[in-house]
Image (cartoon, rainbow, N blue to C red; front, top):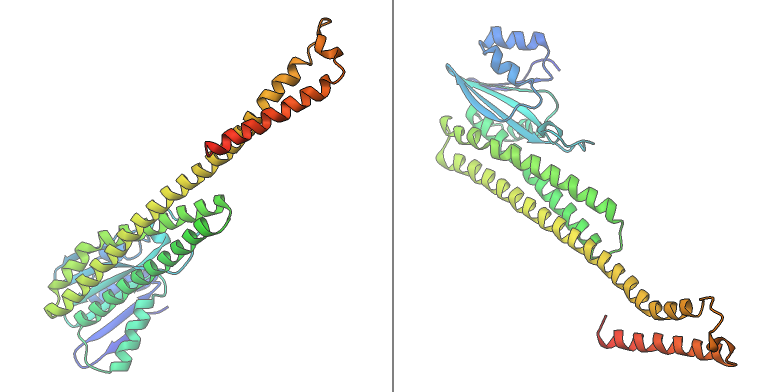
Length: 299
């Protein structure tokens, strides 16, 4: 997409660059004297959030949570996309590799309000909407976790599938938490813009709330995984307990059957008329006594 002017009034302008080419970056460097190293940072898909200042240019690199479901969750680019924000004089320039919800929503709000807006105010609106994407993601992950929890404890589901879902949930939550933690310094640097203290406080409070949400989510997922593994062990122990009880029932009668299966010539019991029935009765009595004993011991 070519370089586009999203907002302009008598004193301020907002220029947006989506999926910039080499020519676009060269134009930004020559036209606005933006350092090439800063422009290169906007193209690195795995770059962490940060703040830098080069002369009069203030550079914020933030990351926005995405709704894309990636197969592998290895890096922060699998759960978020970055937005580079350059602020100088009365101009704000945003550079990003893909379409962002925060950019679209900010443009819509500026159109609806139709009021003069400074670059600092635009940057603040972008940052608040970026925090909202993480807030929405935390709510979505929490709902998924509640669903998995209900399936584990209330339904008979495939445990192998559940542990995979829990692992994936833990990976997503951990990566989001990492992005938010690294974003703290960049969020604090918004105090350098011409903004009211109450507006900066709102941004910091929103950031702290989202960080706390993901910390809580990480702890809940870890506890759920521990409970899941404990429940799996309990079920395995229950199966082994049942098998052990059955072996207790059959061990004595197996001994008797093995005893009378020996091939000795001098075994008087073999010539008893009702020996077969006596032996079966003894076996049944032993099983019944063992069953009563196990019931009384609440095995």
